[in-house]
Length: 135
Image (cartoon, rainbow, N blue to C red):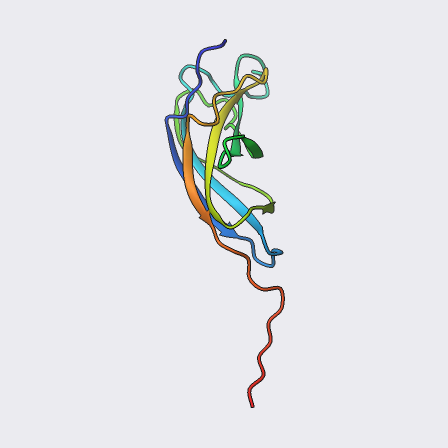
């Protein structure tokens, strides 16, 4: 198998409920650091043997569930801090979740989703309707 691709650091996961989202609907925001010294990022001219994207998984149950991807900064060749991305609306149960980040090469080769993880708590959704009567 190709050399191991590892994220150097993951500064991770501000989990926030989306405004006007249905109960259980959330967005996941991630920020990570990666050293592209060994595997440079893909670009318009470099499309093979390059790092294409980072995939974000929910690994809470032990079986990775891919949530979304963050494109690698085009042409990056050294250490890069603050790579960030945000998911669209996702249905997540309330409670503690373990999220994993992987690095994926252009040929689809991917690092282990359990090698770089972070934990965040998903809040429960708000009631769909609420009224009060005061006499």
